[in-house]
Image (cartoon, rainbow, N blue to C red; front, side, top):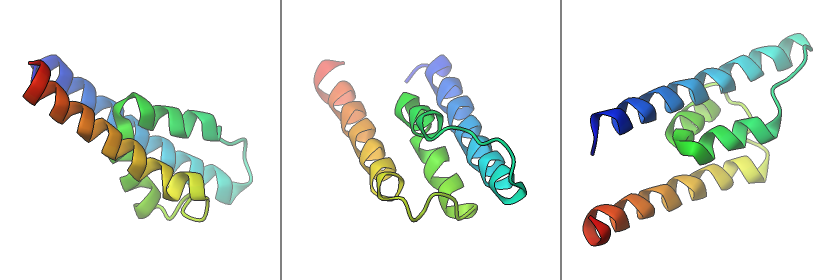
Length: 90
């Protein structure tokens, strides 16, 4: 795995984690929220681990089925894609 790709994954997962924390904070304060589209989108582009960690740590979006089951599904798809890439393609 390339160094740039690892740095990308670290950054996108850290960003996802922070976004979930910020959205929870905004929810508690009744402020303008981060859209669900953005929260799921950050997971899709590689931040699924950070999104799941943020969801669990901040107890945020845990009652919404599309987060509860969707984020782990995204992670599984990403893991499968990496396995395919590194065992078959590369």
